[in-house]
Image (cartoon, rainbow, N blue to C red; front, side, top):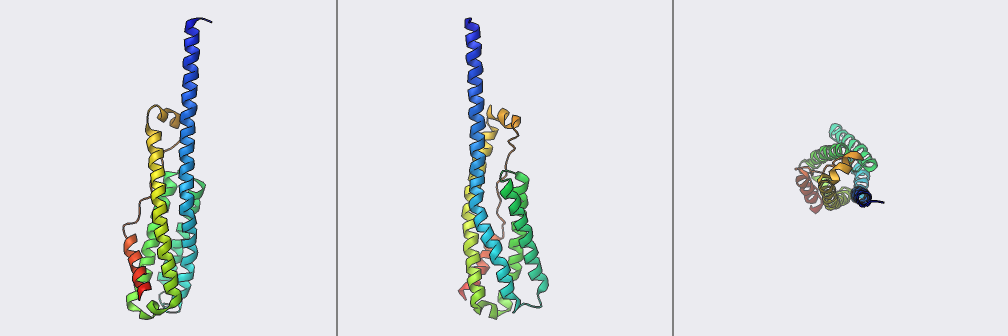
Length: 200
């Protein structure tokens, strides 16, 4: 074997070694995103279970506000469907942005429901509603913490994916960029409504 053949063979082996390493790193980072979403998913499932119970508890006081309660349940169902889509494809930018939008709609709907707190003092004194509101607020806080870990994982993945020469492997094996989950601007406002409701 000539020296030029040895050099060519060594260069080829080095290139293959580098490509395998880059591919494995991208796979590891996508698995980190999936794991991070798993923590969010647990809390979202709990949230989606609490909301129908809360609506049911509010019905005895707000039977004439059927449209508002129906909007909450509809938003909850859309958010749950969006969450299921992310669970199956946690690195999909479209799935994540769809879930973020659905959660923003759900938060807004819940805000409308909790706005009745001021008009109906009996809502404040109902023990079941207070307990469900506290559980929902606690769950929302857990989602916030888990979402931060998810966003960190997405940023790490996108950063690694965009670096040269790993970007070549990403394009070759269809490692598409992912999306961070932007929080709804009004989320804190609605959490405050729940806290106010449970404090009284």
